[in-house]
Length: 270
Image (cartoon, rainbow, N blue to C red):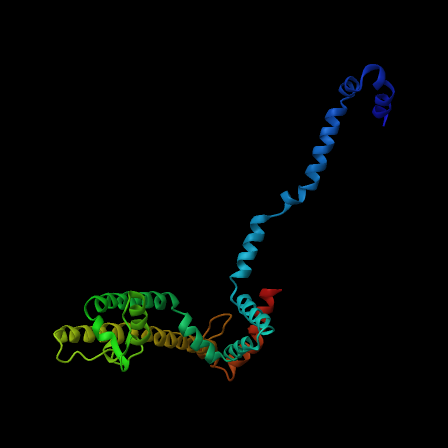
């Protein structure tokens, strides 16, 4: 306040700039403005960006959160079209442990399943190239008189036909195209059909089915082992049931009174 009075009194005689320099008002004003700016953005410096990014990553990678987010999305879409509400019936799977095991058998080895399917697609594409260059005439069927249905007129349609029909056919692609009996390429067609059947149908598709079945068996055995462990050993101390059953109802009394699992979890949480 005193400096401001001096500035107002002598600014006309000595000059406002000279008085401000002598009173150091420029530095104070700049310091006050910088302090004001720093105070406004101080919360940004205090904000821990790394922690919050890590917390968001934990939230959006949590399976339970993604599960409920998935259902929330289909609930919102169901308000526009009731067709999307049918997806909520999948919640029955989450209500039964056995059904969850069946679902996990598909997702347990998803990387191996994905890589095996990609290899199957590559093999089918190789057979598509061979069929397009050498056996294209066998993919033309006469639907009506004078009307032909060409399933291999270009690489895309030929590849889609092999994926759609070849993988679903019980005997391979040979069941879906014209017979080569009496044709000059008959011997080559036999090799083509048999190798497609053994490589794609017998081997690759069987590998995919085997991975799913093995995963289901592994998850079932793991659940049975856990159940057996809980029934024959104390969860807290790990002593077997045989040690406690030397006295009548020793194991039952131990797990319910001495080392109660609920009390142990309460101790860890609180």
